[in-house]
Image (cartoon, rainbow, N blue to C red; front, side, top):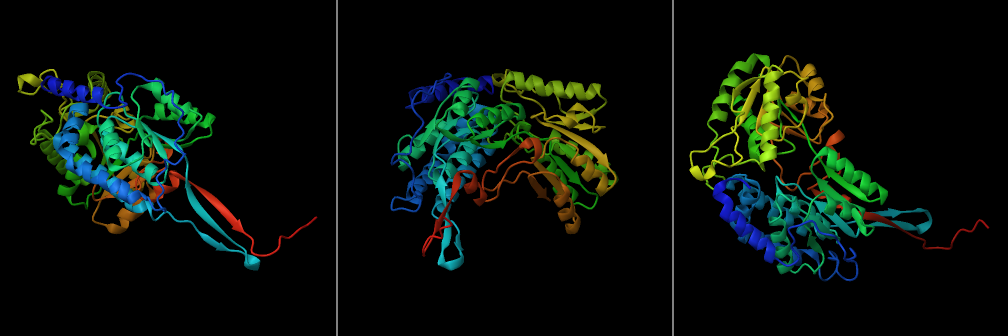
Length: 471
């Protein structure tokens, strides 16, 4: 829940979930065989292809955009302005893979003597998607759209903290003409996830979440030799050189730290600023951070809503307290925020925080906080900052602000991360692959390359003459 003011809305959301076909609010046991091969696949290259099936789904997402966004806000506390963008990205994702499905192609290879071979992309079978609570509807679309476009079935388990909107997506697919059983939503926690990962009929698991849980998913899936895509945590560096456009760099730092109350895996929470411009940067970023309007996430004017729940809020505040004990200086925020609206006083709000006087060995710099906490660190040279930026077990994202385009590309090449933003941050168009290096996971979501992670390659070799016989 987000605040006392949303209690009635939460009851409304729960009521919607309770009456939806196939929905369950508790941990469930998957008893039906997960086998939807018999005539239920979406066949992208045959008469009943994917585009006419999924195009209506994009229209429904767009038509229901405000309703879904409101439910998203009630589920996880982010601002309505952000939630509207999330749903917009989700329908774009479905539309993108609807168009891409008909372009699934193989390769023709000419062999000696007139023989030839060709390859073809075929479905994996039943795929499992396990979502996170920070982008519930968007992640459900990111996983289901390419899976279905490749002809697979998907069983999707949303986070137990945000169970509602994935069920809405299932209803949208059903109304659009996706065959029954092709996209199913199951509710529950770790027990449900374990059942899905260990189910013998599951061919692939795509998981978004923390590194410790990702390791467990990988271990369980490995026992069944299942394909796995893992999109895990991060502690991403954002490097700001002295020749940058300072206004854009400050904007980028805010975008890299405070979207969804800082609860974003690819956030650039280690902000490295070249010493020459550190005073100017800190002055401006603190002024802008103090101006962020925190409060009722259902209001258009709000820019930061509530954190996901009370234990998580206390955990994030604990990181700030520990940072102060280790020598960091709080320039602003870092405290529980109590809005003026009396209906919101019990909400899980926090003032966005900027930490100065940070060192690389501090806990706030090394560990993923997953909250609105920016750690600012000084640096001198390019070589030094790249080495420090890479000194982490994570590798999800990175960013660099500079007017020197040669430097920008050189730094991007040397940063050990799946994504590098140049003169922007947290831009995730569906056409562009997203995923991590190192402990941040492997595999990719979005972009054309994702087709490779939801299909398997078959080679067909054709002999046009007589068979050579060595016996």
